[in-house]
Length: 245
Image 1 (cartoon, rainbow, N blue to C red):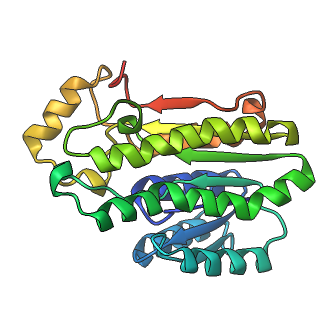
Image 2: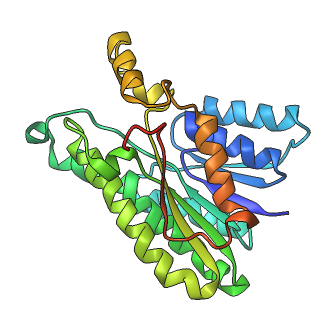
C-alpha cells in the first residue's frame, strides 16, 4: 500500500486531496494545526468508504520548525517510506504591504514555503533509496501573477514555484518528480473574506464562469502523483478556470 503525506489536510482543499487519495487506496498521513474537526471529518469519511484506519493524523504548527521536526520524527517512526508528498498547507494575509509586519511576513514564508523545504527533506532520502517518488507543491495563481493587497502572500507562494523548478532538476536523476499546482479562486473558507459582490466579480473574471472546487484541485494533484504523470516534472500547472490566461 502506498502512503501520502498531506500538509494542511484539515482545510477545504487539503481535505479534498486526502479524500481522493483515500478513494485510490492510499494510506494518508494528515497534518493539521488547530482544525481537528476537519481531521475528524476525514476519519469519518474514511470509515464510510471502508477505509477505516487509513488516516494517521499528526499535529504541528508549521510556523514552528521545532514542531515540524517533532512531527516528522513521529511520522518516520511509523512509516519507512512516504511515496507521495503534497505540500498543501497555506496561510493568507490580505493587507497593504506597508502595514505588513516582520512577523506576518516571516509567518507566511514559514507556512507557505519553509514547511515544504523541511517536510520534503525528511522524505527525499527514502524516495532516493527507492528511485521513485512524487512531490506536489500547492502554490497559488497569485504566486504566478501577484495580487494587490496580498504582496507577502504572493511572494511566499512565488518562492514555492522557484523551489519546485530547482528541486525537480536536482531530484530527476533519482526518479523523483516535483510539480507545482496553482489554484485560482476556490470555494473554500479562505475566501470567506470576500462579500457577495466581490465573489460575483471574481466569477466574471474567470473565463469558465464559476469558482473552482476543492475537488478540482484534488483531481489534478492526484494525477500528478499517478503513473500517468511519470514524465511530467518541474511544471507549474494552473487550476484557475482560465483566470490568469
